[in-house]
Amino acid sequence: MTPPRGEEPPKPRMQPTSLATLTVAALASAAIAWLVISHFYGVMPDLPWLPPATFFGLAIVEAVTAPSTKARIERREGTAPVNPLIVARYVVLAKASALAGAIFTGLYAGILVWLLAAGRGLSHASADLPKAVAGLLSAAALVAAALWLERSCRVPPTPPGAPSGEGPVDTTEDDWRDEDRADR
Image 1 (spheres, rainbow, N blue to C red):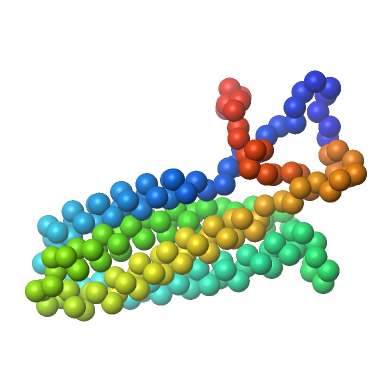
Image 2 (spheres, rainbow, N blue to C red):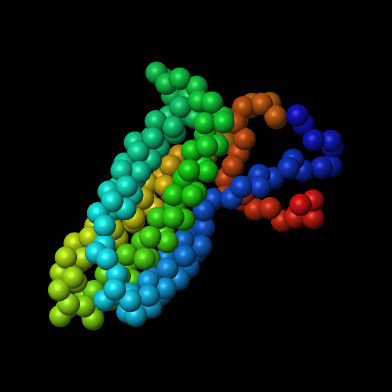
């Protein structure tokens, strides 16, 4: 559908995940984790292994999905076309995983720093240290895989010579800006 003459086509409303947002979420989570663990470490149970294993498993799933999704969107030889609804679901999964991964990266970073700085003499600290390292690494891997999957879901630019309104939409960084928010 071509917009009337003189009007610009509508801009996409969904924007790529901001690294600044992820950084702020991780730093805030790290600060909160530091405060909580410094006051309540003596009464807290041991850190579990399940969250790092879950984050690592989800990171693997998203990392495996990213290249195949990109190939299907670009309609490379030997790949089946992709359902747009599936791509939308992948983007939502990637955005949620990136934010959750950033929050848990901060959480495990705060715990790890506290364990290294103040928990040396505590008996539980030595048992929690490998779990905190695994949690930090797996949550950071989840953020990286989620950002990769999100980037893989971008639609390639319209090929030169293609009629307007047909083919993929150009979703370069400039098109992600939504300056007109009056219609919301």
